[in-house]
Length: 226
Image (cartoon, rainbow, N blue to C red; front, side, top):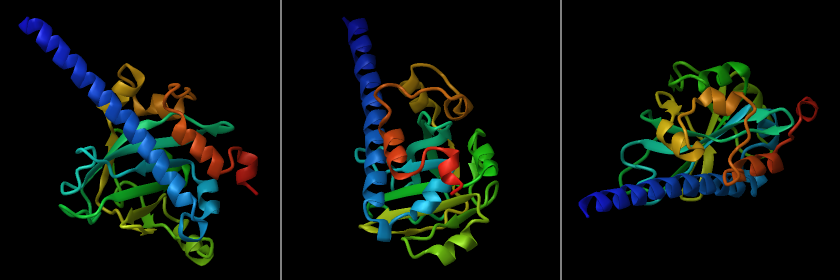
């Protein structure tokens, strides 16, 4: 009986972790949709159109996003041919993100703007502002002047807290693949390079973020050069 109880407990725990991963992916999609639904106060569409990869770190309930510990989980997706590829689970920690214990929920969105930034993303771990240049992203349609200054950065970053959305400096924060969540999502151990750079298709129940990215940004290289 004890053995059966242990097996049942492991099954419940595994199911709970799987639910957390897919719940987090849905929340990431919701964050992107909400931000892009207000173009005058969101990410400039021309920047999203030029981005090579996008990372969304949503604030999650039930401990999925540990506010006081400056730690978050989310997903990265990169362009693959004429569309967007499979999601890779990511973790971010440390840095001057400004999280506060008991404070409001914070969502983060990062755009990887060039191949150099992509190469950093494919590594096991890298530091924003150290291994990769990061800058606070401009907000809204009227941010053209700021956009020119920001384009030297490999990564542009934004945050949303209490309904206020704006560029944020994440210098000192580290990003790395979430190997456990990726294993849960894909059913096997898999590297971030395999997910983001091999052209693999996302699982049938993990396509929501790619669909949202396709909606808000051109999917072909020809469109992006216009």
